[in-house]
Image 1 (cartoon, rainbow, N blue to C red):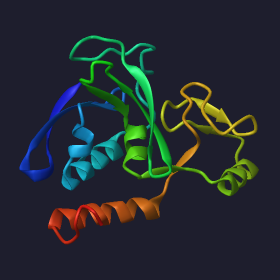
Image 2: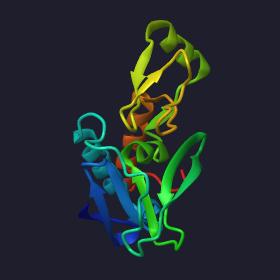
Image 3: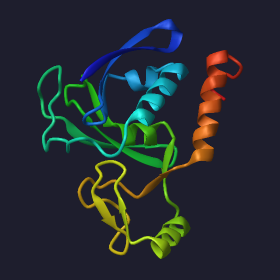
Amino acid sequence: MTAMTLDGHGGTSIAIDACPVCQAFWFDKHESLQLAPASTLKLFSLIGEQKGPPKKPLAATIRCPRCSLRLLETHNLQRTTPFRYLRCPADHGRFITFFDFLREKGFIRPLSPVQLQELRNNVQVVNCSNCGAPIALGKGSACTHCGSPVSMLDLKQAQEIVKQLAELMKGTISVNS
């Protein structure tokens, strides 16, 4: 893991850890929610610089870097988009893949049933965006290795989020908008 210092809300600094090899972040406590808009954009850019699936698969058991307890798989929802992360049972923080971070922040969304059928009509196998494993679309719409659903980077949505974050950075819209 590589330590990064990012800007948080209200002029605070947030120290997070990034692992380009496993393509994941470690956020202490609620740091992901405390990221300033410019920091979310910085992490989005960092993720965009990575090529392909993770260099090596994640270990079957991942431990908290603070207390060494085994991290627990946790499912959450951001608007209508599900995402997953591994959390420390002692509440020290969470480990989240780049893919699920993008889902949490609204850059990636699951395919609609119509989009999924259209993809099936044209493609038999896709690679999982989270772990790189093949997904046979005729057999299902989620990765059998890591459970991630077939998803897409919604460019229109991503552009809108980037625009909103840029406006927040300029102070032209309120956080509750």
